[in-house]
Length: 331
Image 1 (cartoon, rainbow, N blue to C red):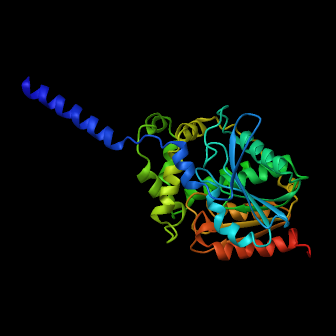
Image 2 (spheres, rainbow, N blue to C red):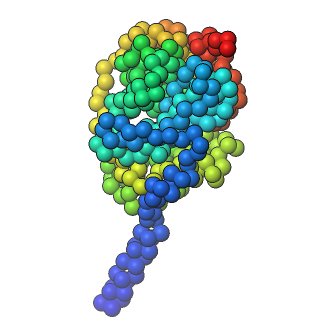
């Protein structure tokens, strides 16, 4: 009996010690904000009380480009492009609800409509009535959904490894299942889709999942530094953001009807990394076939985030596209 009692006590102590090792509390918002704002960072408050972080950079007299980040990312992902495109163009970026320094919102609405409303609230606040709209991953999905909802505002689209039209997904899944090539995708997205993991993840230190996810998404690019991993990690742990992320992944995803791609008549530049482990390059070809006025560029040896992995090359392709759809006017 004494042996059993000591064994139980030992197990309990080990479990508690293990839990203490894994647990990671939130980081105060003021601490994270101080680290990840810069001189260009600004905030505005929406009607629903959400405090939205955005940056309005580059040439204020140039044609406007609005760029939307992907899931679990932030506006910081666009900074390499801002430096290049901003020499001639006005570049507006933002943190969506549950992301970056926008983080949790009072209404706790993190669905697709909230994302579209946030983009629209920002351009309305800034008085920008027409612009080129671009997005990466989930932000690419926001891009084509916003364009469908507000076609008169969007002059052209830039889709960077974007989430696809509803009718694409079954085809892509079938292609992935049939393929012998299996890329190592970020584990965090797979786990966050599971209710059991969401139930415990608020108590876990997400550092190692973050590290694996970033390396996988960026195709193990040399741009993945400790500072880059820390950016994802610390923004994820910003006060309120972990709960917001879990709520976003737990939200119901309604089955959408197929989208009539012929309605997306805006000129569209499609950029894709061939080694994308999150959204297969097959989707790039589906977009190119479906959209009436599209140009496709696929990058060899590049992953899910071309604007950070190969900023100069990808920005050069964007500039060539912008010269045709948003030409500069002589001063």
